Image (cartoon, rainbow, N blue to C red; front, side, top):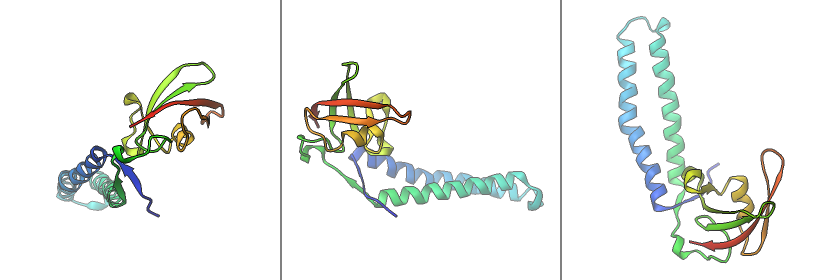
Length: 158
């Protein structure tokens, strides 16, 4: 089942670059490891060969997954989005209702999430809670620990 995911141009470029690097450099490197291990003799008792074949399987699975993601990716121009509601690529300032602190988040695709840059996935509990909310609305977010956070949307921008 493939689903459409929305990316910034930069985010999609990172995925395409990673895919190209895996298909060119990493495939070649693992092929060399397999060839070197094969040259060492009996394959039935060759741990290096088994490890290289396992690495090749994981690499091919990662390549297949990235190809699917890239094929279904759509680039979103944030300047074309409505900023009256929270959507992907929205920059959202929220007030934590319980302690009156403020936080700013940018909602992004899962592969672009980076909490150090305040970029959270739209698939995260907070991202899911904020999607579709407008200024002044309160999102009730259930955390993995079972508690509920209440976040008031203060500002939405691009």
